[in-house]
Image 1 (tube, rainbow, N blue to C red):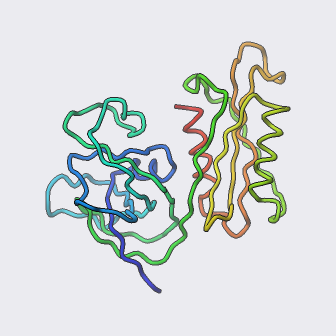
Image 2 (cartoon, rainbow, N blue to C red; image 1 turned 180 degrees about the vertical axis):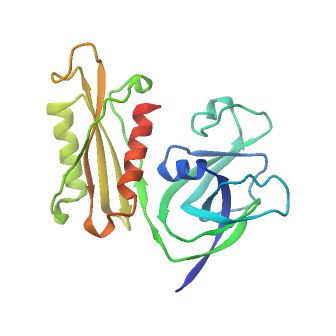
Length: 241
């Protein structure tokens, strides 16, 4: 099977998966990428810190392809986007963009710095960033959530269909709507939605703002690959952080 050589960066679990899901958009490092670095960067998740030159970990897991949008000093205000627990001066924020989670059963080398990895051709897909409108206090949303998985004909999984559902829910059922969409070559292959209600009639009064997970669709060809789970994780990161 054909392989592709990637520039790779190893990140200790669970932060590699957080990048793949869209929850972590900044990687913090004590060093900068090489001058003029561009192109895809393979995120390899491993389970051991590689603190010194020399040691490697052969059990790395490829989880995403990304691009580095910008590198700048690490600011205290970056902590949420970096999923960091403390701010350390003198470090750098790597702003990540064009995140494409990948599905692969391969194990690859995890090493220090940016290094080369050969990977068999694998499924990679883009996740469109979830959009949340008319919600001022996302931090107050908590776990009153339901999951409803529906089956719809393949031809109905289109941008127009998703947008029509979004508009209907916003206008008639909820006060706002968040969506996450997975695409391959511009074609929608999976979608998930989150609807926000204010004191739904089905619940006792006093619950305030409630979020329901709904409209989870994946085309049959791409099921059982973890794509729907990735979208759900992204939406939950909006409602539970």
